[in-house]
Length: 119
Image 1 (cartoon, one colour):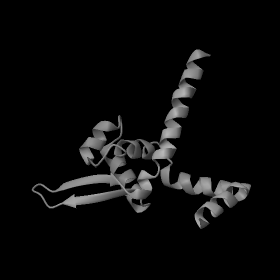
Image 2 (cartoon, rainbow, N blue to C red):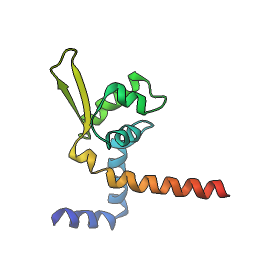
Image 3 (tube, rainbow, N blue to C red):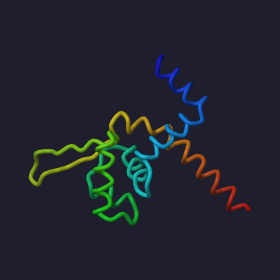
C-alpha cells in the first residue's frame, strides 16, 4: 500500500516525476539495452543467441550492456558447470516487471509507424 502512495505522490510533483524518469532511463537507456531486455522476455538465452537475435550488435557491446544490466539488477547471469562452460542470461523479477513498459512501447511504436507512413 505504501508503494502506491509514494508513486501517486511522485506523479503529482514535476520534480519527483522527472527524477523518477531519469532513474528509469539510467537503467534502460542506450541503443542496445531495450533490445536485449526484449529478447530475454522470451526466456533464457546464451550469449550467441542474444547476438543472433539483436541485429548489428557487436560482441563487445553486448558484453558491456549485459554487465550494466546485471549491475542494475535487470539481468541475471548463470554459469553452468559443463564442458565447455555454459553461460545463460535471464531477466530478474525486476527485469520481468519491465514487460508492461515494453508492451506499451511496442504498441506506441506500431501505431506511430502506421501514422507516419500514412502521412
